[in-house]
Structures are given as structure tokens and as C-alpha cells.
Amino acid sequence: MEEVMQLGKGVSFSRMFEALRYDGSGDKIKLPPSSFKELSDEGALDKGPMYFRLSKVRDTVPGATMEEDTEEATCSGVLEFTAREGSAELPLHVWNNLFQSGTPDVPLIEVKYVSLPKGTYAKLKPEGAGFSDLPNHRAVLETALRNHATLSENNIVVVNYGLLQYKLKVLELKPASSVSVLETDVEVDIEGSDSVLDNEENQHVLVPLAIGKVESSVVEEGKFRYYKFSVEESASEKVASGRANIEVKIDTDASGGDTDIYVSRHPLVFPTQHRHEWSSHEMGSKVLILKPRDSSLVTGVYSIGVYGFKGTSKYQLSVDIKDVNSQRIGEHASASGSVDADSVLCRNCKRHIASRSAHLHEAYCMRHNVACPHDGCGVVLRREEAADHVHCNKCRRAFKQREMEKHMKVFHEPLQCPCGVVLEKEDMVQHQSSTCPLRLIVCRFCGDTVHAGGEPVDARDRLRNMCEHESICGSRTAPCDSCGRSVMLKEMDIHLIAVHQKS
Image (cartoon, rainbow, N blue to C red; front, side, top):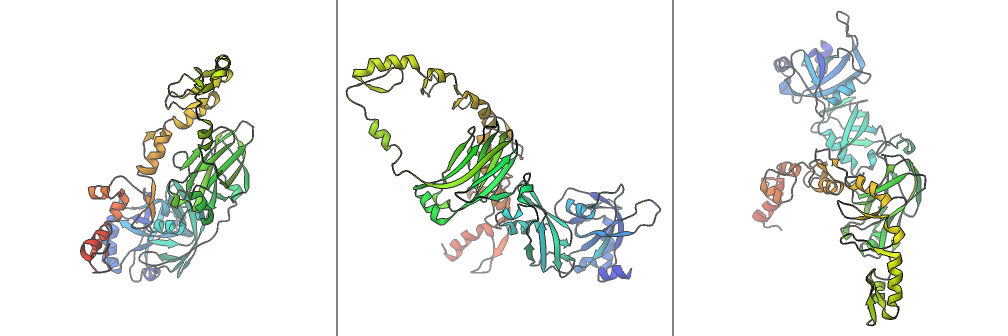
């Protein structure tokens, strides 16, 4: 009892409960209503946020002596007092850290009220590679820790980034092995992962790719291999002015495998079939020229996703910045495309032919060439190649016969978004970049990378192109720097113009 009183600084609360799991984030548990009365009688409600030390009971056989397993323990806050009597409900984070060695048949835990010091320092280490590749990964970690009231050494913290999940182990804390992270500034160190890139094929890892260098690797069907490269300021000026192009080239062997390329610019770190800015689906080797939509956004870090479309593919990947030919596109065509007054139009290929050789040309053309009869196409083909020239019934694009199966699978096979919407590829890309509630955005108010959510309820926020998260986040108030009045963040610019005449 004295030990419990010392841990709780005068508050004595130590109870045994059956552990139940509930679907929730963070580290706040649910206790039964009777615990609220006991803690209130002890004066715990007057001491600020409540913290508890949870430890697994080693022996769960009825009637046997129950001892605390000191090696498997963690700390938590409390969310509410709504659990059924005799039980404590734990979120996934607390459950996984408490039962690291497996869940017993009857999971009994001891819950003690404790007083925790405010944390000043934390050292964490990712269990796998790839976490440091996230843009502003410290801010991502900070956002994840906002759902936590405590941290304990040797615990695993799970950080979600979109559909990806990263695990970080807490190596060291100061000033104690368990600390509070509420209303305090914690200095965070993130150690490098021990994972080796060669063993991370199934994880989201960005392999550095130097411009002008060739990277060789293998990708299996249905899997990705990711790379990253940077475009510096000096090169971006040439690209933005149109004097150079960013060229991604992949050479594949003829072993029967096939690949696709997906490219994005950060903060979209891992491009997929649904979320990307550029892509190429040609069969075999291919070259993809990146043309940024905004010439001011060329400088930065880019990601390449090599996707195994069919079989196991060996490939060589390279990125280069190549100068554009000084001759403008169309100059040669305009010079050679002038129509001679003494010419006639071939009825088959629709080209202008000198009248003196028109009969010979037309006879040869009719015998060897055929125009595609598809509406809007009209391309002239050799007769032996005509059977291999086909059009998609849905989008009317032209392909070789062997490419049609891949085209139908990539572009017209229905895809299901994690939000539940079912669309074809091109519509899905547009959906996940502009309207999907699960798309990632950088909030203009909190600066965190978060899910956008749906449309705001407030019509004024919709007119300001806010998403649901920004509408809610912008409703927080902050003091005006000029007058000290509390103003909603999303109304601050209007306040400064209307009240203080600041543009």
C-alpha cells in the first residue's frame, strides 16, 4: 500500500481487471464507473490528468497466487469511465505493448494510479526502413503523439501515414522511464533503422537514384520497387524554360515479364496505380518524359515506383536531364508539308502527290496500304500490319493487338478506393487527388499531413476551397497579434483586413 501511495503521491488506487480491447487510437483506457468514484474520493480529480501503470498478471489460474510481471508493463491515460464493472478496455496501442508475448486465455491486468513527470527527451528508433523518407517525418511523428498521454521505454509507437504504417521503439526517455507527454515540449531524437535495403523489398523504402546513373534490380508481379531522385535549382531552370526534359528510362529484358512506371513529386512519397502524377504502361522498355504542370515546382524530390505488371522482371532504371533539340516541334513538318500547286490527293493515303507520278503512286498504295476505317483514326498501315492495329471499344485509343489485354486491365478494370468508391483508373486518379476523403493534404492551419475528409458543412469554407479537416482545424482560435482578440484561424485574414486594414 505504501508503494502505491508513493507512486500516486497520496492517491491509493490499485485494482485488478479483465482486459478487453476496443477500437481506438492513442493510449487512453476505459475504466468502470466505480473506479471514477474511488478516484474522486481519493482526490485524484484535483491533481490534473490521471495516469495509470498497467501490468500483466503472470498466473491466471483461478485460486492461484497472482504475481505482477514486471517485464510487461506500460502506462496510459484514461479516456472515460464507461467500461463494464470488473473490466478495463484497452486501445490497440496499449494492448499490443502490454501483451507483447501473446494474449493469455483470461487476460488479467493490474491498474495502479501513478504520478508521472513531464517528459523532456525521447529517443525512438524505427523497426523498419522507410520512415525517414517521409517528408517532414518529425511532424508526422508529432501528430501521432498527440493521441498519447504517456510514453514508456521499450514500448512500440505506431505511426500511420495514409495507408502506410510504421513502428518505432522507444529507446530512452528523460527524466524517467515513463513520462507524460501532455502540455510539454519533448526533444525527440530518431535513430537510423538497422534494416538493410536489400531485405526491404516488401516494404515502402525509397532507394536513392543519382541522375545519370543506372540502377539494376528485379521486381515481382504485383509488387513495387521505389526510388527517389532530386532535381536541383540549376537543372530546374532549364526544365522550366523548356530547354531540357526530365527523362525516366527503364530497360527490361525479354524474359516475359513486364513493368509499369509511376512517378510523383513529394509530398506524394509512394506513387501507386491510383495516385501518381506521371505514368507509362507501354510493354517492354519505355521512356517517360516528365512535364511539370507548374514551371515553378520543378525543384524538389521525386519518387519512382516500378510495378511488376506481369511475371518477374529484370530491369535497368535511369533518370537523366536531356537538352531539347534546338529545332522547334513542327518546324520540319511545316517546311516539308507545303502543298505543291502541281499535285493531287491520293484517294487511299490522303497525301499530296506530284501529278506526274500520281497514277503510279496510287496503284502501289492501293495494293500495299490500307487506311484504318475507325472513325477519327485514318492512319495508313501496311496491309500485313492492319490486322494488328485495333481500337479500344471504350476509349477509342489505338493499340497493337498484343497490347489490348494490358490496356483493358490497366485502364478499364474497375478499382475500389479505400473510401468505397469504385471507378476506372483515370477517374480513380482524379478522385484520389481531388475528392477522396482519405487523400493526404498538408493542412494550411496546423501544418500536419492529414486525411482531408469530405466537404465542409459550412458553405463559406467550401467557397474558400477548404476540406473538412481544414474547416474543423481552422475553427480553433488564436489571439490576434495586433489587438489580442481571440479569432478563429480561418477568419484571421479577414479580421486583419477588416479591423486592422492589413492586406
